[in-house]
Length: 408
Image 1 (cartoon, rainbow, N blue to C red):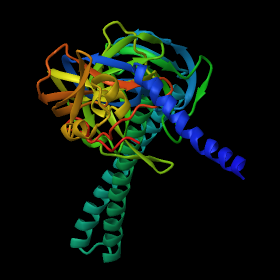
Image 2: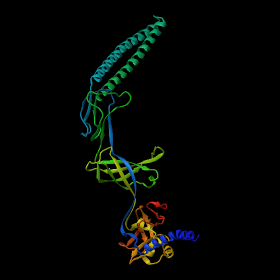
Image 3: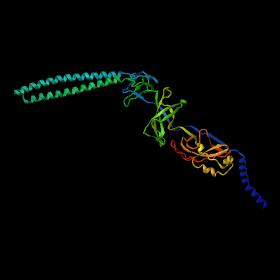
Image 4: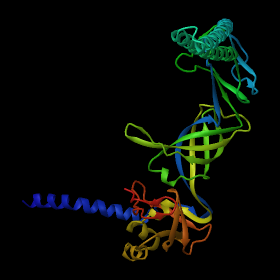
């Protein structure tokens, strides 16, 4: 029985001995402390987005008539001028249509001449019948027949004249269609797409087929960026944008927000809006269709005193406090550390410094008030080997990023 009690006592005492050993080791151990200097600089709040590079102005050149491509006057990447011939369609069909329309016009004109002669004859017969009727030399019915004949001739002349006008319009339309077999560039620019080859037949029966796409000016591009609905309220015209493209990963391009379009894009219940970013392209590196990774600067504070955000979340444990100031009673330190507190390490002591914080971008935080000066070393982490550091929940509110939720 005594032996069992001894074993139980030893078993109960082992954890206490082990704990005592740990604290004994910590009494002589020095925790690992990581510090960072207080700096002065800019704090930028930014929104990440992706988009597609496009030319500011692009014109699709199409064909308004059906025909076969006879020749091409430009190719991919060709620099073209306004009025330069891009495509010639085979004009044979249109020329025959013009000739047929011209023949129809001549026939209609001849019909008008013939009917005008008939009208003049009917007019003379009516005048003679009127005189004879006045002398009572012919019956009244003959006079009536002559009057009807004249009216009929007049109607036929008007109809022939209308047919002549229609034939003239058909000839004009045929001549216009013939002119449309020669397709010219509507603007100065560069060809970025060509959709046809010589010998290909294009059909304009339903809609004008696109033959070329011309970009007006490749030195000025734009990026159509997709912005999440939760971020669109922070984007306004004039904000600075930096972006990269996969073709030039080491180059950073710059632009400016021009507008945020109101038309939403809904895909898989995700709502995004399109922000148009103007991007100068003097070296012509940006090409239409490139994917851009954008950082939109929505707010900036320049020349402010700042510390790492992790310094505001650091909270020393009693063991760490004891290692530096010889006491394990952290209640006094916690009382002093209430609110926004940063810990400094100087002369072998951890001291809390009360500060007032301002803007933050999540990584660094502005210090508005407090005894900190540029270059002061602040503690961002302190713990013994193998021990997880203790941090306080982040409750800093930022005019750049809005209220920050507690970190878990």
